[in-house]
Length: 202
Image (cartoon, rainbow, N blue to C red):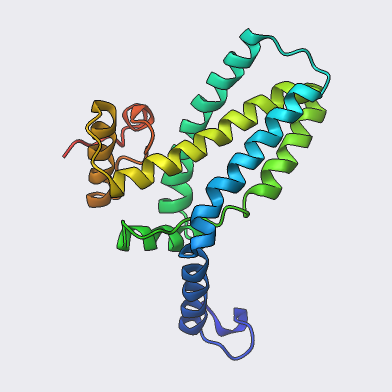
């Protein structure tokens, strides 16, 4: 990078070092790690309250259909974000995720408040476009519940040895990812890796 693109008198290595330290402080914050569970559950609750106070009729069938759709969509979102945002593209996200690969048992993660403006903005935009604020709230609430489940499963994969068959399969799947970073991007599921040719078993 040319020095004309750098602020002040800093060189590229100094900026990269400063950026890495800033990312590390945010990622390793205990408030960020544990507080994210609380904040995310509050956001999901707020979306569900919105769903049932929006005035849109919500049948039991619609509720469970949107729940399934939201959770399933999250698995695809997770695959895309993990593969491209964390591994292919170069950004603070890749730097932060690199910390996890260097320290798999470390309590670190994306600051939970970063996505909130996007999530809230998307909710109002899609609600306005579809005129279905209740349905959108359920879908997005369950989609974000998928993220909370991802956080819990990913934490458990690195810290616990549960004997459930599905858990052992996901743990083995993710272990391969840490050995071969170009494979096994799914954490809560394996089907997208199988579909897109990034599934590896050894």
